[in-house]
Image (cartoon, rainbow, N blue to C red; front, side, top):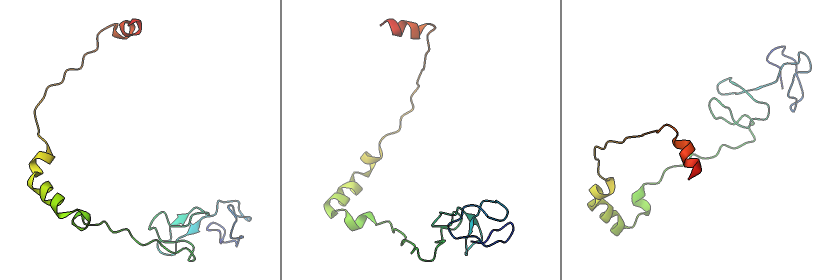
Length: 107
């Protein structure tokens, strides 16, 4: 691993440069961002820092229609207003009585 400060070559598992003592960082080949020595992926672009590490495939979100039974989907769509709930205007009053904590301790 090459030190970005003094350009000295260091062993691949070194955390600090043997020449200047600076903390070594892996530079991403994609965005040139410094990363921790033990990092497997870039903290800037997510690219694998070690070419031997294969990137995991992106997880595609499934469409709910693919796994929801038709009769259940129909019921959800026909009772949509019931599922959304109801909005009401309410007033809430919070009160703190002087000495209420002492009173609560005794109860």
